[in-house]
Amino acid sequence: MNKEQLMRKIQETGFALYDLTLFLDSHPTNQMALDYFRDVQKRHTELEAEYEMMYGPLTAFDTNTEQGWTWIQDPWPWELEA
Image (cartoon, rainbow, N blue to C red; front, side, top):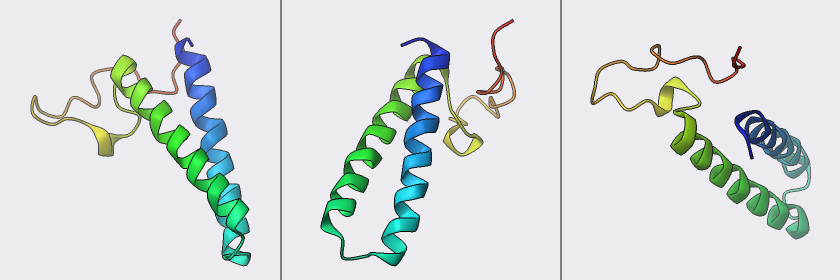
């Protein structure tokens, strides 16, 4: 996957997690939904880790500060390459 495809998958799984959260708020005993949430959550975490390994942090919260505040040195994650 290229950078844009990977970001799209992260957005898709993130949306699914929000949607599942709303469903589980009103159906907390639905085991099938809870299992699906766990699957999507795992995939979302894997996609984020892959993105950050290849392109850097997705949010400022994930910035490694050992070299100072490096978050602003690279293009923002949502900026497309020119």
